[in-house]
Image 1 (cartoon, rainbow, N blue to C red):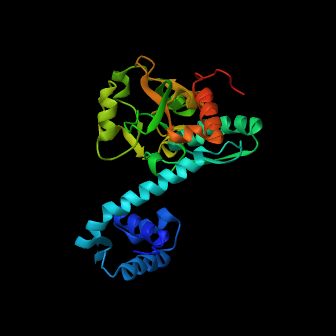
Image 2 (cartoon, one colour; image 1 turned 180 degrees about the horizontal axis):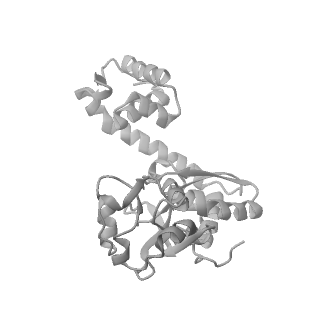
Image 3 (cartoon, rainbow, N blue to C red; image 1 turned 90 degrees about the horizontal axis):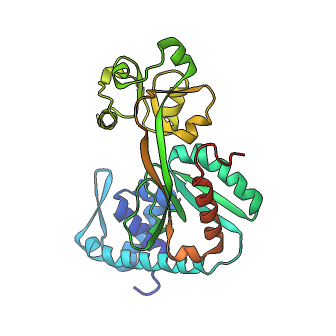
Length: 298
């Protein structure tokens, strides 16, 4: 195991975690042939077979399984080393990555980052638009905006505020179909769906709307696309109030229904709070996201 190449170890670890050479290559920013060569090189270096190809997946051999936990420990140690180094940085500059859902990344972050850029021109922010929870422990992001409180003890989470959403439609849709105000009226109008598995129907039922698949005019499983369909007059959809209020040509409907409430959490790793650039971005986001709709707008 002398002179073990760390890139080869990462190739083994990501392939084991994802079960796919192509997925591991995307994760590491490599081409698949390059990653495949690194996996083959670590097998040759160690004199063992770590994977067996099963269809399109890479299955760990018994030897690979035995070594996986050791590789994970080395990966965690390397991540901790990187975080400790980041934590010592006190220069107000560099790149800070922020993960957020597609709607927050598209509609809320740009205004906040414009303000931050004016105050701290040395800091560049990488926006990671993802509806999945980025793994802060593995430095997939420095800061995450989430709607659930993380449970990992190494993470610092600040509850920024409780946000709310209502149901909206375009002005053209309201002009054509009327202004439904209660659940009874909603049963006879079109909605934009978010999935075909029944989960969104269950979500709507929890908020007093007992609909069927016949109510859906179309579907979109990403919030930005979902909102674009609502804006084009294809039906009713739910949206955060601050996003809806900043969208021209949108009318709140189903006024008699109570708001949908959900928390906004700002999360980072405990050691990263000692990094001045990350701390600066964290505090700027906390201040900006804490504002209720319409407060402090530029």
